[in-house]
Length: 379
Image (cartoon, rainbow, N blue to C red; front, top):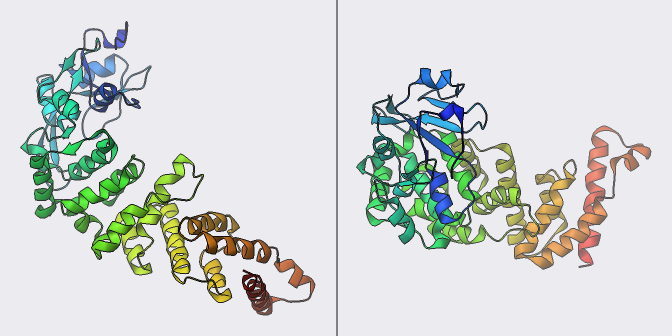
């Protein structure tokens, strides 16, 4: 892993840390590389051309590679939530002290620029045996670690990883302590959205449920335990031919499609969901209700089309029909045929006949209903 000659780093004690070390040893792609600098001051970093970016602690961007270099630091709990820490960065902080503040042993390894491993907390052994284990009892000082640990399990469960019993105990302790309530919505959603992109996202929600965190963070999902378990299975039953970047929001939509409007709204508000997730979840819920009828009536289909705003947003219809096809292919085929015909009716045809204002809307709705009735009778 030698970086060759880098004048910006000459004379500095530098280590690659965290996820880059972990994933490289697992054979996973390394997306970002973070570095820790031991024994330096902010002034020394700026003199070498590094640009400071950290507000809460000294982090700098390399002038050429733009990778992050953080000064070695320690943390002390001083308040609630993941932000309730006092950070101490100084040249006296050792690498071992910096690694000790990290969440899991597999994230508390470091490498020299030449690739020599520094592993004071047994991360390599846990990596080899597939264990997610906390570094120290200070794990409970940061409630966000409950979500991060669940997310790592969603990523690595396919490799046989498990959460150490004592770590799961600390996660339950955090869920019971009230600390989770101090997490800001944006941080909860950031971890959740990342989990939705992991290989086994359902494990993220199962883990949060097992330790009691889901009831605190997303209580709407735990109102009915049986429905939750079915939803977690349903998350991977997605429309065919989705792009990779689409899968997280479709997984979320399938997770929440059984919730009623009030539950969806309260969950969306609590997590400050992006609009694209809110809208898709609501559309999936409307499609589920249409499916649960078991047969298609013209009124039900027209209400569904109105509900997903199909007349103005026709691009929504095809994905929802594809979703319906996952669980009810015959209904989806009938709906697709009816939509292809009814979508050909345009308001300008009625304008040409002299319809205006409210009468135009009423006649358009009447003719759409008549088309749907005719087409659905043919199925």
